[in-house]
Length: 228
Image (cartoon, rainbow, N blue to C red; front, top):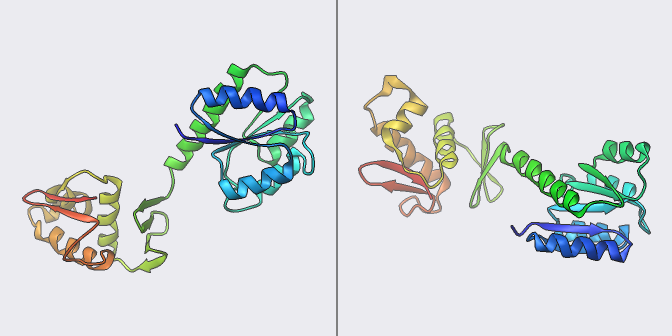
């Protein structure tokens, strides 16, 4: 599993209870007992999820959540608010600021583990719908039709972009020349597989360090191509 969870609470017995039970589920646990220390750890370690008590020293839970949601690199980390206060306005405030879930003390450890699992599942499902594909040093921006390598933009034609995109979406799978021809050029090009070879050659010159010794696009002799 290897998901990292940061527990932020100033009650040591609560921290130990959560740490013990979540560790049994395979999560890697870090802890913080005040808001300032927690914020430093969040920025440095970027946990996969934060369990955050409202009533903590230095910066309270609401203040810490606001700071997290205001910083680009950490703003999307899911947060479960944890507090003894079961008043409705506290729940609303936390959710309005950007909490992903809310649970009150005393709580069932089984319920909390289930909520942790559910929040992480939703978050990972959202990431899977990303508009970006990353392959090694190459990033493919599906929304803006842009490709960069090591942060430097690569100018591709529309067909080259579509070719790289379909290979990236099927990374590790061998795609035949006829399939690529049909998906990108359409039926009117049926049988003209040389069109695919020409575009692959041009694409390699743009994305490979050495197009004669490709590290990304592999030729499968007699069949087609795959992205390594």
